[in-house]
Structure formats: structure tokens, C-alpha cells
Length: 117
Image 1: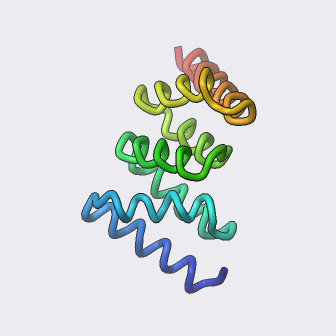
Image 2: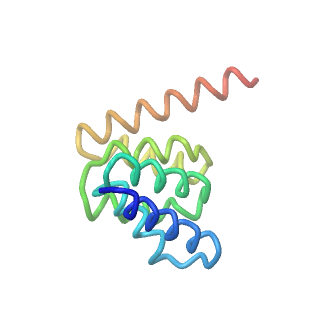
């Protein structure tokens, strides 16, 4: 994957921010799961920036692709109540690897909350 692929992911993320179309968001989730390092980073940025809007698409991605620690990390970076609920669901019902990643993300979010109190 090269500059053209990165530019495509960047354009997709920009289109998603402007239109809110789920298809563009799904392409970002695909980039996290199938892209090179640059594409994954760009896609993750847009997903985190979208916050709760990204959570259902990440859920779909986890269902479609199976365990993905990258998508779990993105949920942790989103950190909203909706993202936390998804992490809690994954921590109790996901695959062992996915559950462990979700539990780790929840512990980090709890530590952040405690440090801000």
C-alpha cells in the first residue's frame, strides 16, 4: 500500500465526516482491518474523531472480521459511554483475545476517570 491508498482512505474519511454515510465509515473499518500501517492510522483517526457515530460500524466490523484488537483499541480511544458499553459487551461475550483487549481498554478508561477526579 502506498501514497495512493493512504490518499484514498483520507478522502473516504473526509467524505464520511461531510456526509455521515455509513458506507464510507464501513470502508474506514475495512481499512483498519485490511490496510497497511498508514491506512490503518488514518482510518483509526477518523473513527475516533467520529466518536459514537463509529461505534455501530466498529461493532459490525468485529462481527464481520472477528477479533480485532485494533478496533477494540479504537473503542477505548473513543471512550464515550456508548463505546464503554460495547467494550463491556466484548469483555463478557467476545473471544478470549477480544475479551482480554476489551478488559484492558476498560481498565485504562477507569484509570483515566480516577486521575481526573
